Length: 265
Length: 264
Image (cartoon, one colour):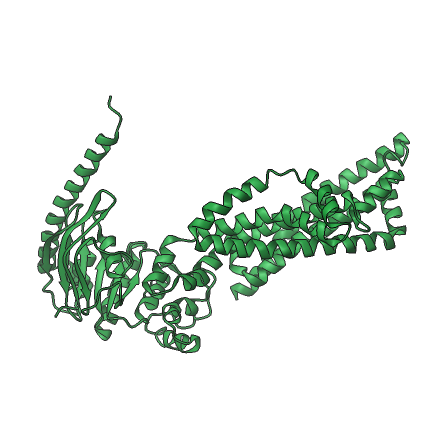
């Protein structure tokens, strides 16, 4: 039985369909990247998995449970959302505290992960004192320490400069290898998807469905030099073709909608 | 290291920012003094600043007694107002129905002419503390309540979603995110409110009281002691400034990050 399972999931906001029968699964210990044209409903899939929204039709299960009744997913939103009124340590232990873990124990459990996340010595610092990369690692720590079965990462490195992003990707691959997390990650960056994931799920233009799944058969640990290898380029090329076709469709749709909304001339 | 340097930097920054205001204020007092001395205008019409200071000092016992009275009205009235504003703002944050029911009423309450109502309050509640506390509360409730309601509503939706994904109840979300998110707006509203509170207290006393700077001003005006009226005005201004500055001190203790955020 798959850890995460979506079957024929449909969701509309008002009269606007966003998801039109999304099917895919994530196995235990697997790293799956999800890509698709912007605005296609990737974040909606995450909101459904995090139990923030309910599907109109279809079934979602995570470890056999519906996310609304019992969530097994820890969610890392696009923005780091570190609160300025809490120290870095108190920010990272937030999820445990909310879940009812005693404050001292929550802090101790989060603090134990600080060296792994390259944050040792910054426990008492304010979030504003951290660099961009450190803020993302703190946000990831806050997600991981909840010890839920599945991590949902929504463009975790989207806001970083490309050099920091590359470092963070290498670092994430390294810690993920150690902890064997089950990860579902949204990204706009095809190279990032191929570098990190075991499998890439491509969503179509809105209303979204899964239009392609590509297994990334590259050996681990992956190194930066592999990015230029022919096998890497082959996977990347497949994805670029599908994604661009979908992006063109999405763009055409947006133009159509703009024309319809514009006053008759 | 950077944290120990920061407060000192802000202090010198503030002192140098205040300097132009002090210079202009001093220059205005000087012009006033020179004009009174040169023109020989009668002190009943316009006393010189030096006379206001000297007469104020020689009546310091009276002024202090009335100032204490005014300060009591201000603080009690503002405390009552704050308690109501918090209770109502939290209730409104938890219930859309209450929000739609109450917020328009608050706006309407602001259209009531307080000048007409204050004398009625004296008729209803007498010359004691109560009518003055009611006036101060009426004047300050609106800005504080609206500041809080808008502060709660200004919470980042994504932050609330994050807390929901962690399984937080509505109350937990309020305590962990909405309440701290409202602090910057709350303290802005507090500063506006506390200055209104002093004006409200003096006005309520002016209408009728046994003691207080308001009634003191009214009595001195009737005795043509313009110098003592102005001395009472100066004391009122001093009280307002002290209360205003103390809100920064409170903010520094309660929500230092809100101060830091605003100065960015």
